[in-house]
Length: 249
Image (tube, rainbow, N blue to C red; front, top):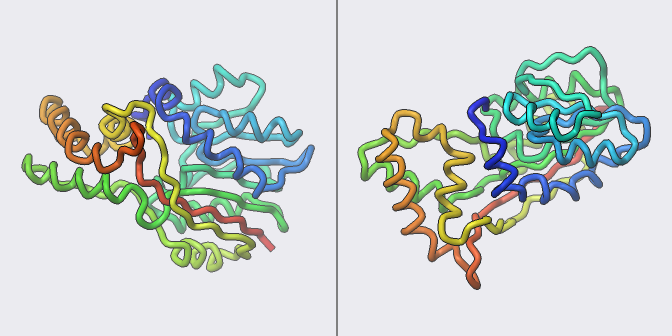
C-alpha cells in the first residue's frame, strides 16, 4: 500500500479512524499492557489506544502513512511492515486492527502472524469490510470499466462472519463476540465523493488505464451511481462491516 495518499486520507476519509473509536472497547486495553495496532494508518487510533495507558506499537505497510503517523504522534513507536510476514521481538497482550484485514488477500498468513505475536490469553479485536461491502460501487465500476474495454480486478477480501471466524478458529483463536452490520458511510463531498473514494482506496484498479480514461471512468461511475446513494443531500457509501473479538487460549 505504498501508493496511498496520506493527506487525502486524513482530509476526506477521516471516517475510517473516527468510526473505529468504539472498537477500542472491544479490545479492553489495560494500563501498562502491550498493544499492537496492525494497519495503523496515520496513527489516530494508535494514539487513542495510548491514551488508555497501554504501551502501543503501530504497524503499517505504507511508508506515507507511517511518515504521517510519526510526524503527528512522535511519542509513539511506529514500524513499516507487511501484515503477512511481520516479525516483532516481543509478544503482545492485545492486537487491534481497524479497516485493514480486508486488504490482505492471504488471510491465513496474517492470522498466523497475529496468533504468533499474542501472549497466551491475549486478545484480538478487529473490524474489516464484510461480505457485500461497497457492492454497488464495485458493480458500477466493473460495468463502466468493461464499457471502456478494461478488466476489473478484485482488490479486497470481504468475507462472511463464518468464513473469517472459521479461519481464526483453525489458527487456535476462540471467538468471543461477532458483529456483522450495514454501516452506510457519509462521504465528504456530495458531488464527487464516489470518484474521490475510488481514487483513495481503489487507485490500483487503474494501474493500466490512461489518466484521461481513468477520469472518464470515475466521472461516469459518480454520475450513474451518485443519485442512488444520496439521501437528504448527503452521499453515502454502502459499507458492510465485520467486527470480531477473539482470544488466544
